[in-house]
Length: 299
Image (cartoon, rainbow, N blue to C red; front, side, top):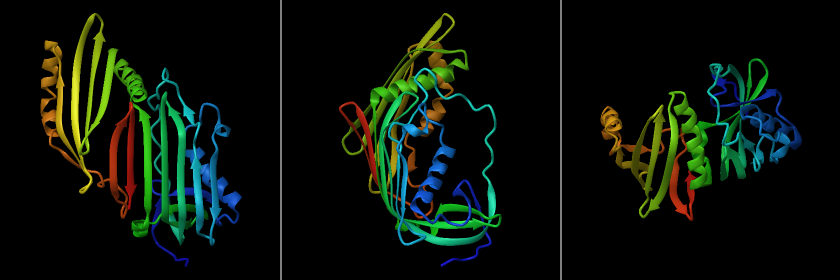
């Protein structure tokens, strides 16, 4: 049923789909959804034709039976060229007054990247969701929008899985750190990182780095242990430490000691930043033969 609502919609929680009315064919629906993807992501190194794209099918109009996004082969950047700092401030999201809103549902939504590569880090990811409540919105200027209806979001059920090699993650982080430190006239001459998953949801991450500035060089080591609670969907930072045998670096770390103490024992609610009605109901983190695997469920 179509209803009139005196509220607003903006790009922070909805996707603009061009001029109304609603698409009538599967081909037009797929094309409009693909425009959202190409408008929000950086163009891959080999062009948009290098990835499979979007396939969408209507059910009982305006409901969508299925929408599938396949970004396998999506590649941006190289390990030698990390993302540059933005040179222009971000554009505020567009805001429009709603004229009409029509409730609908996406029966099945899926995403796959087997794999994609961003700045030299190869990631395998899948996401499958069912019964996603949405709204087709027409604003007062005659533009069409699609957004998740948070008032019915508790209907959503989803599963996700992400795999990334620890070695690849280490090299990607090294690249980003090298650029960040260069802005402070520091050279990262050595860097190592390891992630281990232990029993009962305990994840341990450790790393060490050697920094150089001119003829001076110093090494620092960091370690953190996090425990996941699958019943309460929380993560507790059990131990955090940063040490250095270099007296000058150790002295500098004293200034950060209060922040380290504050982090230790901190309990993080994994659902605190979820949209209204959406809840993370399961999460596991494991390391299998050098590959970090994160799996979870929503709903």
